[in-house]
Length: 239
Image (tube, rainbow, N blue to C red; front, side, top):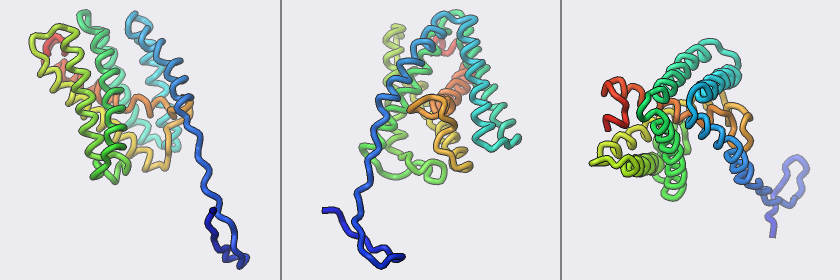
């Protein structure tokens, strides 16, 4: 039986209808992914000039989304420009390496996707204490641990694929990059809360904006490039 509510303005009782359920957008999300993923895989595989074109166009879209979402505030746009430019440079530099360039980018993409997926399902299943409620009220410590585990599993798989004598260092570094990707996600969540935005744009049906899809990748790519500079050799060769 539907419950009854009292309407103060009219002084009468009215039937309260149950809220209508919003249809799942899973199908739209899957269609968008099916359309976007193959060109990305191909661009990574073929490299120059396709990968550079993909990343540069993507960077321009990110800057535009940030500009629009901030209401045209130049200070935020300039700060975002510096961050996005550093991440774009990192992706290009990592792919340009002759030995492990392509597989490094594949590793990062799959690592970040796995971290996000594991964080979502573990956080939703286990719940628990919030990770950073002021920045992103939905994120939990259980989800963060899930992100570490998801990224670590990808590291183990890449280590086995490359026939590394020991995969433990690659597992640890992958988990660290998974954690960094979650920090990138938190940064974007904080930005959206500040400007009261659910998504950075509606560019990708079912997903929101491009920034909503690559926020973790930007941070992870920048961290990976820093690691490569410290090791003074390709990261996957060093690991």
